[in-house]
Image (cartoon, rainbow, N blue to C red; front, side):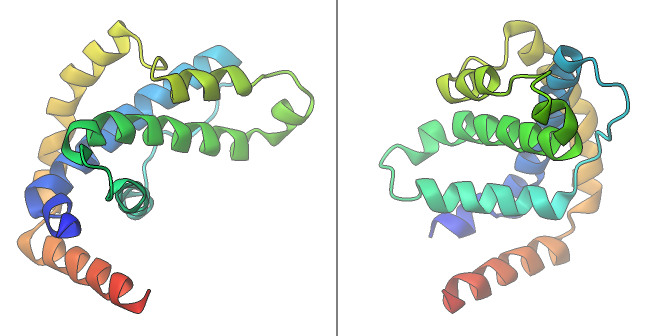
Length: 155
């Protein structure tokens, strides 16, 4: 079962570490482009898990799921960061002082993250991972998986 594999303790730790690291990098790029100063870079791990789960459900019928999952997750993370930014800065968007369409296109085309951003990711994921190794216990990973199985059984 795909859910069991992608929501094993090790995968939860890796995916949340990637999510937080890439989210902060993506949001940093968006903030830099917009010149907005005050925004939270905190990641809600429950929302992150939900986003990862929804992506997995969208992709689970793909024959090459294991090959494309990380790249698709990076795109999803960038979209989540952009959505958060838009929600927090609706006036900027409404006044047409910041165009989101080019960013959406970059994300969909797989060119949103540049080489420097990938280097920052590779350095920073090493700093984020220990946080999730400590936070995601066997009990918590089992509870997450049980919750997802219940969700699937109710649908």
